[in-house]
Amino acid sequence: MNTVSERLAPELCVDYLVDYDEVVRFGVETGLVDDEQAAVLRALASRHPDVAVAEWTLVRGLREDLYAACYEGGPTEPVVREHAEAVAAGTLARAGDGWEWSFAVDLALPRRRLALAAVDLLLRDDLDRLAQCADAECGWVFLDSSPRHNRRWCVASDCGNRNRVRDFYARKQAATTGVVE
Image 1 (cartoon, rainbow, N blue to C red):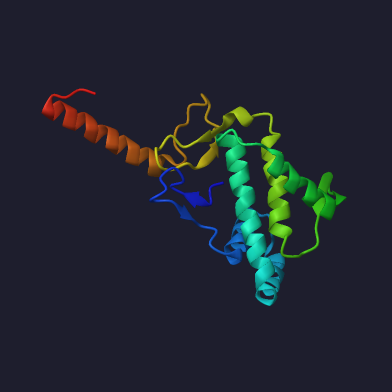
Image 2 (cartoon, one colour; image 1 turned 120 degrees about the vertical axis):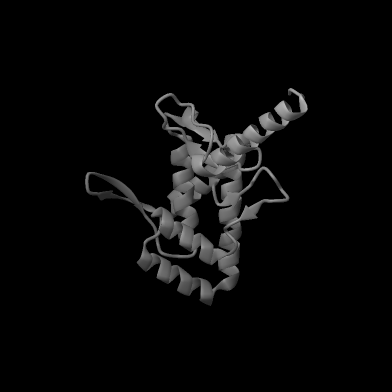
């Protein structure tokens, strides 16, 4: 969900998943796709650009469906449908002490892995710790692992500082003008 910056301020909103290559880069960065798979995916995308664009669109749709389910009271059915399609396309196999999904390396691989991760997120026991940044524009999501569960900002040094400075300036202005909010 955090591939959109300033989600809550449409005039400032930036979507970082601008094309299929960025989906692959995100997959590598998050460990959903390894470097070897990424090379295959990029080659496939160059040979089948229309399919890559379709997959890019589906990944963005999955992201928005997950966000809507978590923060806008939207239905979970679209996310569950993506999950079911991923499960149908995969093979569950023993891996070390556990089990792992295996998929063909095709252009749908990042979406399938994201669908599994999305449902894993929705099924967490500590989903009540899933929070959205308190910044009025940000909209990033994080898992609050603070000891008192009172984290407010996605990144304290970014949104936190910006909001603390904004609040300080507003208090200074109020003290100077005598206007109290």
